[in-house]
Length: 475
Image 1: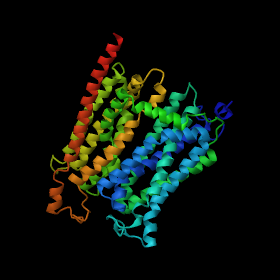
Image 2: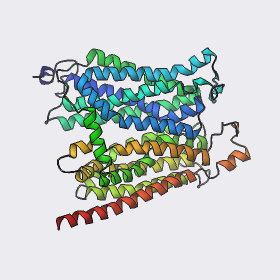
Image 3: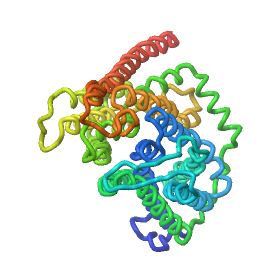
Image 4: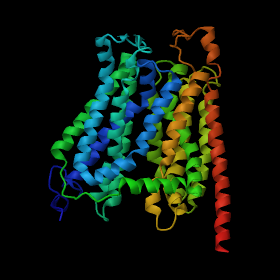
């Protein structure tokens, strides 16, 4: 019997009947989300402003990073079941600490080694020379892979700990606390980026990596000294079983079509990280606060998701999802409007910033209609008796949307909202050439209006077709 869980021993064990392992896991989940979202909201800026990658190249790198982070947990979770959660969490935070600190130290190391020359100025872009033709151009990849691998363990192990350290009586409450910690961490992490960037210029993007690394180091120390559990690790699935399950899902035509349709929604959502930060900074100026704008999304979701779910509880899951899918193109259209309504400030905000925030509000409302009901509907489309297996791959849409969303976002930025600090413009945002180049910057969002609208119509059609086929089977 688990005495830690039964008697509530330990520093945290007496709090509301949960074990010490439960509270430690949730606390370090908050730290990890704080580190991750500070890093992720600034990733494309870091790749472009510090490492000199173009928008399209940065989109490929960031999209691949995000895609792997959604795919690998299926396999790292199986390994964690075999080696134990404590070892897995320590391993994960060790990798995360090394990865983030590595990204912070690399520019200084490259400069001291003489491979490249960096210069940092207050509120100015990083000045570098020699990087594009240097073998050091891709030296950040091992650090980035370290973050991917560490993050993949965290995604599976923390939620697994919550499941193992709760009972049927308090599991719902346990996962509610877990979800709260995720959102607090995400909100806090994104608020750190803008002050650092505004006060330190592009060197602030490097200090974001220090922040994330230090936060993960604190989590590592916390786990090492405080994470104790008597729960035995489960047997888990083998890599072969996981691979066979993945093959089953992607060869199931009905489920694959559903995943691809919902991918359209998430491609638009991914622009909070893929294109929005660069877009608003280039259109509004360095005083823009993309981290704060992105935080509007989780705020709206937290406050509205229960209301929307209750409102739609008597409706079919596909009905709720379809409503959300038709909201998402409207949200992208609102985002485009900031470049069309003149230059007069609205409620103290630049029109581009104001319309971006308004668009994000509608984007979050769409998520409230879609996300809670997607898993329900996905399970209904899965073969009877295999719902659990198939649900394990239900978030493949995030894998696809990460790749396509970031690559498309990068390409559209280069086309309609180019970097003013590129060789072409040399930082002169007042030049007639740059003004002409960004005159149609809002066209970027029209592409996502189209993707959202096609996805919404596709889901409506999908529902009609699957309903008809299901009726035919009953005849």
